[in-house]
Length: 83
Figure 1 (cartoon, rainbow, N blue to C red):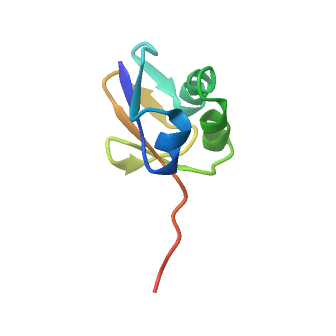
Figure 2 (cartoon, rainbow, N blue to C red; figure 1 turned 60 degrees about the vertical axis):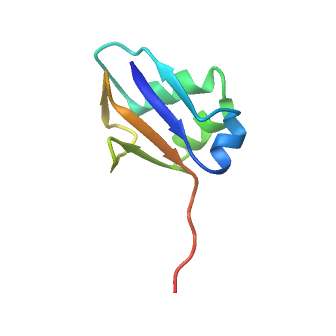
């Protein structure tokens, strides 16, 4: 099972804090985004459009990254700020 956690405005968009997905022993972020799109199309589009930051087990990843059963995914909205 893969746990997906939504943060900040994405939590509001999803209407929940997290989801669980059964994707077999491993998959890619692209495949996971297609699964997310089935219930939350906007977030799936944002992942594929690279409009959000995605991390696996606290490491930022790219679309072709391999995600394994048991991983924790965090989806974070764009950040801005600075000095």
